Image 1 (tube, helix red, strand yellow):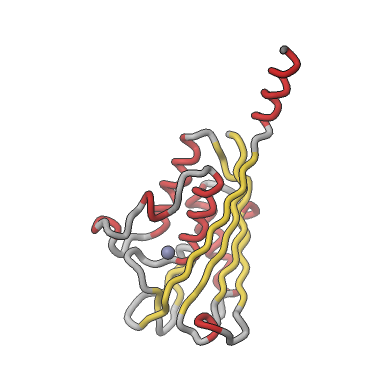
Image 2 (spheres, rainbow, N blue to C red):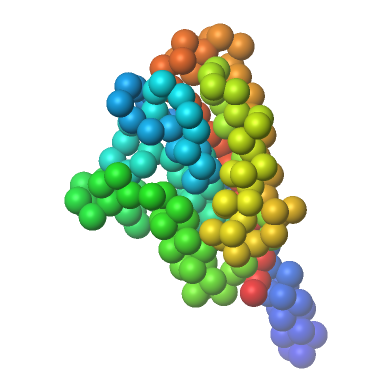
Length: 172
Ligand SMILES: [Zn+2]
């Protein structure tokens, strides 16, 4: 009995959780392009109810998913007028607080943005510092990669940007 209890305690101490996030938004005229909380100069921007920051949305879903707390739509429905054109970093900060409330902290986040244009590499350092500050983690805990889709599909045709993310949480 005693042995069992101590084993359970160890298991709980080492509790780790992984979550996955995916998002896609359409590129249109007359919208700002915001990725990872950074505004990028481009003639098109992402369409959505909030600022449509596809990378931040994928990261939010990965973090929520790791804690089995649903997804971005459950917490910030796009039918809610309060979230119109909202800075998605506000959602991200709230999600980081939510997972702390249930006893988790972020071990690391990794992500990939898939965009044919514009070139994202020069913006990645700024995105990493912005997201790390918002999540209250170090820059070393957040990875962002950018790739194209080799001209294929809606991303390749420059009609949309896709983002994928994973998050690893552990006990506070
Ligand atoms: Zn989204």
